[in-house]
Image (cartoon, rainbow, N blue to C red; front, side, top):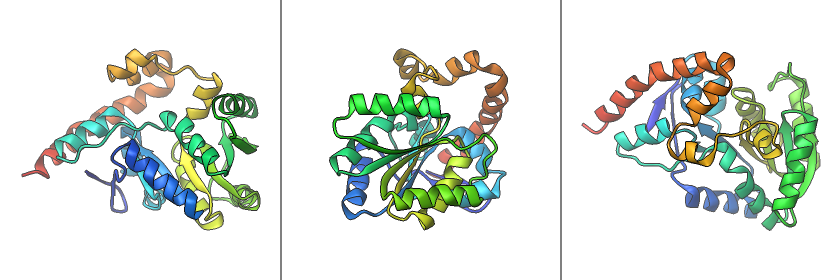
Length: 249
């Protein structure tokens, strides 16, 4: 299923975990970098109005479905995909990097959270090498000189995998720039994934996620920040669903 943006169309091109594993392992073996984005309804809202975000998204090599609505819409279009949220990809990707002997970097969030995430990764994955922890300031331009300096640092360290926990659109914009400045690095935009791993944010319980109610759990726990976001997402859902059905006719 392709989704309309301000600069063209974006589609989920990684259908399931097996496909993602094959792609990432192949790129790690060849030391070819990548940019991985996880598409959700909030991204679609932004992609419909922010050309900079849409341009950056078009440069993502791998796109997974992050959110049940994307899975449902894809099914309506007759192009089923599996749910692969960014938070669920941290451990598998880090494990693949460790198996390939590649260095890992953590970028985003806070130094305290990154230290906790590093400890969790080292505890969970034998042989993982965390070579850099970088927490940019809150006011951070992902396309500016500071971003370029961070990416050059990653290139100098020969980082194989970099987790970006900056939130959209910053992380995707930085990943797109990283494809040029650090072409041997795989960039994975995983939102709050590192904060979940470190315990600085609490993720919805597994049973809530299985019932596809994680969005409600998050809204209840952080209504001031998320209420408008989910309202905007709900407003675009019917249109995308209808277009998905229409694409099969």
